[in-house]
Length: 239
Image (cartoon, rainbow, N blue to C red):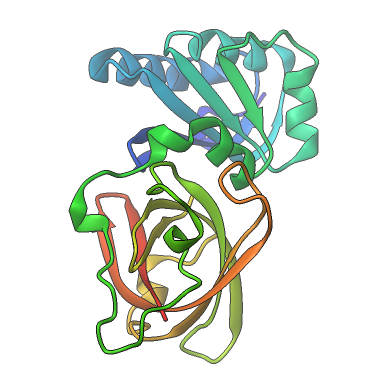
């Protein structure tokens, strides 16, 4: 039997949506205390939309899967994020109602919850670089209307040690001057590893999605970092 302490639960937000990060081996009654905590959080905060991140789950039995599905029926819409095909297969063998969406990557997450992940507060907008000539390749310049949904993006830049890093993230705010990106990926660098990278050049790649039908690549630079409790985001200014 798996021990209770092997199951880990973390709580954070991405955009305006509550995320439950669940990890470990999920078996039988060992998951009951975790289920109770999730249900209490959903009920206390009256959450209507939530994300269950199973990126760090190493296995689960049928009983645990059924309990998780039942737990996430309470919100209006729930999303289960699992890059691991094996874990997704476990859920696909049971009944998943329409209100629960199973996603394998950030592209599917953004497509399912785009408008709810979007941060409307102006503090997350990035100012236009007035020292540069107006760019023609900014994301908003490719659209006739302002972008009001979160979009998946891949960021490529160099860390302090010179190693090039490519990360998957979700832009939870897009403005004329740049974008604000957050990580659903638990393997993304910790904020302590990102310190001192302000001004670093970044290549922003937007894969084809409902907002952009073709792949878009835009040059930018890291403008600043924002720490929000257990989550942080990167403000990237377009060049």
